[in-house]
Image (cartoon, rainbow, N blue to C red; front, side, top):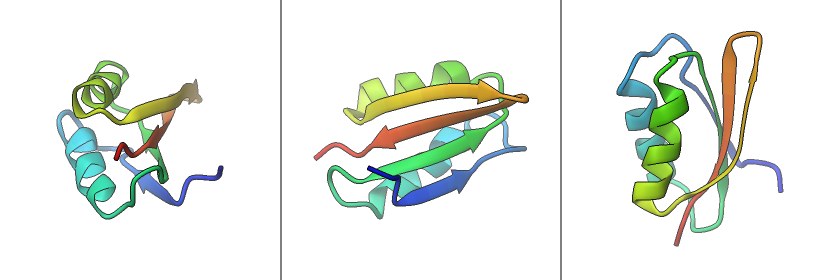
Length: 76
């Protein structure tokens, strides 16, 4: 499944990437996916923690050229 939404959180520092992710997830239906791009070093810890605490599924996490890409499936 291709993510329905893409969130560009590059240039934002903790906690803004996760706050923006939470807001965007609210507009998605259960089971829909979003890809988020971030360059905040804290996102490596914050995004998996947010998903675990919120019940969303972190499908993948990768890094290339200093940009992290996360794919998250909304719970529900």
